[in-house]
Length: 293
Image 1 (cartoon, rainbow, N blue to C red):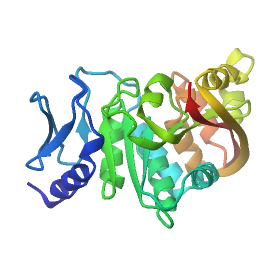
Image 2: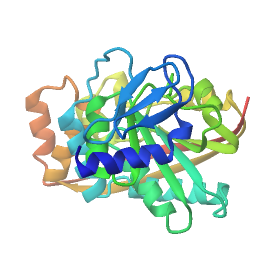
Image 3: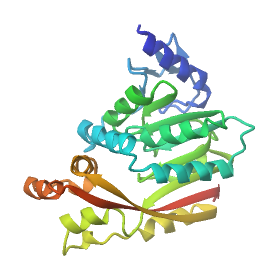
């Protein structure tokens, strides 16, 4: 067994108390640094990269390796979402006390960039454990390879998360589908859910180029905010809007990472990425919910 796998398994073992079996919902423990096993013998192996796949049946996903590689490059190297991450870090800092350890779940973590950056920033003042789940094996594989030294990642469905009740102080959902009933189950008393949803001008330059004259040119997401408000007694809402200058190379990364360009013609993609430089808009609502209904 590799040293890397042992270290990752030891990290999972340190936080094994939060896991529950997705089949029988009983608690799990790490066995011989190889697997998570529940009392009924249901076994989920720890991969050599250090993640666990909790899905009980295969799931097809359009989110493939190339997309996650482009996201990681754009997010980490080009700092495309840094203002968003700083805002989320500040929100968590205002809601949580540094005096107690904190558990943070990123539900729909993709390649792990967001939760890794937020936890890294919080660790200057907090004792933080970050866990990310995603239904895409490719995303979790990328996350575990890149950020798995001090983070736990798992392939799992946000609608049936492999964790016990009241396991997390904070739950993040960044531009991803959500399941608020499950979040309410997972959230500790006094915890909070932070959801980032696209606002009107989110990637408007991409929409205007690829969807000119169609309904998709304009983006509206009022229903997401309405659903969020229906599930929490206390809701705060913050709007964050900024632009980032992207070079030709960075524009190529952008079109590879966004579903907005799926099924677009190669000729049109090449015309978009032929620009030497472009300002791209990030426009999101940050919804902060506490006291689940």
